[in-house]
Image 1 (cartoon, rainbow, N blue to C red):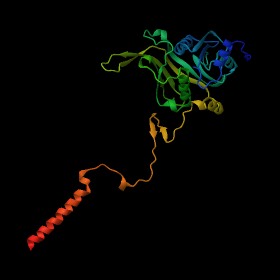
Image 2 (image 1 turned 90 degrees about the vertical axis):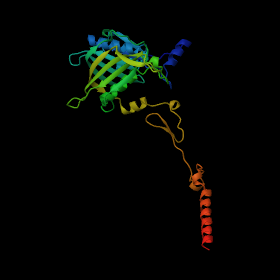
Image 3 (image 1 turned 60 degrees about the horizontal axis):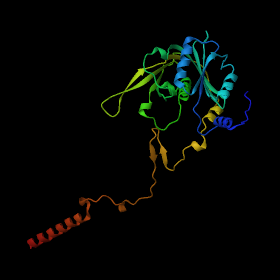
Length: 312
């Protein structure tokens, strides 16, 4: 357990204030840890995921005796010491080969975890293609219909979005979109268990198209990983509800009779009183004037009078 620090100067006071709870939280820092036993596939995967997360990442190159599913005290200590809320632990054993464990913290306490096994991996260094700049926000593409159905897929999708969310921005320049992370969900096994996950990373290349919008091409830059799901530890309902709680200051103020649909379009509801359609001013048309009807009746009456005179 870390000791309580009492600020003695302005610099320490600013440092501690930066770690306090805020309505607009800081960008989440991720820690990449090597376990007591790792493989080259695990080391390459940790390094590539760390490069995509920089500069909001800490990479531990030395081996650590950490087993998150058995003991979470080490993760809680590192989370409080480094002010980090995201972890990826790489391990390798005969029972669980080439394993990456994704973990999230809330209030420096373990929230949830999911384990994936890298069955096939190609590191970024093996792709002799252009790479994206450090600190850029990625575009995510989730392929398949399992991402909203199976708990393993739902949690893994949430983990990836949380890891590489970065800074919250209202607008993104087209030139600022430099790479895409594509994650494809494989089908379930015949036993009904979760299938594989295929992660690919592409660089976005903008080329001339002859019009205002450029033509976009995707060039694979790595890493490329085929993964299978392992163990999972879901968050407790109370802790999950507390973690998703939004401060009152950030909640949008409700406007009467105004709502938004699933596509984000603003919808308005207008309430009108009882209307008298006889008094509504409609569009004036010559064919609907009463004068025309009166003139017709007058001409018919005059014609009948003339006919009667001729008979006499």
